[in-house]
Length: 556
Image (cartoon, rainbow, N blue to C red; front, side, top):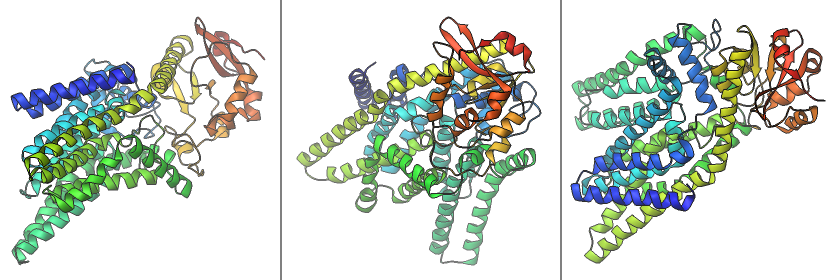
């Protein structure tokens, strides 16, 4: 589906959803159904794409469901995932007989639709009044129109789960402003921290707002001892609710793996201006491509309209803190702003609620002014949807190429599983689909699933996040039987000249390995045609006779 047809399809869907909501008054149902339809329209681009990194989580999930524990290689304890709750859910579904890849795809899609309902509810709460229903519908449809949201809804990783938990925790937090002795948000924030440990950033913001609300209530009660004691008890109850979930999880993590943060953090994050610069560029690109200008309405709405200021400030603070955190860690290298996908429901809820509050303020005037304001809101909403859709079209060729590359890696993994001995060891870049499908012992040359490489002191920021650390000598010391440096299949067996082109790659681990004299001395360049016109290029250890027999010498 090309861009004009996508825009027409989505705008038509939005118009139908709006008309149905106006007639039936079922705005929430229209928001959910319209969002699901728009996500399906996006499916031509994104639905059959599974991120290579998702296969990393899938490997841990399968090992857990099959009794090996949460390990990358059996017997090797390294926390190469940062989404425990997602891994456990996928493992549970696999234990019950479900296919792991399909489970990740469809569960993510279902949660993305649930999050659309949550976005509607949050937007309506922020905007208030009759305008809140229309704003909620627009926010949910705008969210579904986002290529970032549509891609990560079904790409196999945790963003839809994390987003749904964030929405639930935020909704409960806002409810607890009026019912402080029911701290259920603490429990949900604990689950969110299990879905992603960096939820701690959002928990800290929520805790600060809890403290502020308690201080205001104590002041309103004239600062009496009983009032202060009650507010202290309220805060402690919320902290206890969070700790009931988070403390056992963290204690298990620390005793199992021995580090404060997941191994992925150490592999990707350091300290330095280059890293921060990369993070700021990542943030700027997200705001540019996702309609960040929409948030400009928020300060005006808070200052000039009847938007619910406390909740709006809280959501704004969550977004600001998350953006600062993402900039600090240097962003991410995966497609379409994966780090921002879980916060996009909050992003669009706040932006649309702010715009609706401004329109409602004008709407209080004379009838011609009201009609002009309403028409302007509709036009801006349609323009925002079209603008938000644009990256989907721009990314279409990139997504096709990435989908093909992951498909190649799936084929490579399956060939390895069916062709080489079970005790074969493979070192590779990248490792997700290859490791999942092959089920062999795999050395992650980028360190995401290798503690030694992840903890190396390497300057970060010049290359994509997660692709900067390496240690070729360490990898060669482990004597893998196979080393795979290409990220897919080729139309011919590679020559040394083809490998030389990788010296310009953006992955230092590949460049360093190719320049190693030990590689040339201890390994042979080999190739194998795993299907007609599709060649796997690899290095094979000279002593790995069984693998050498399955491959042929690569041309010089």
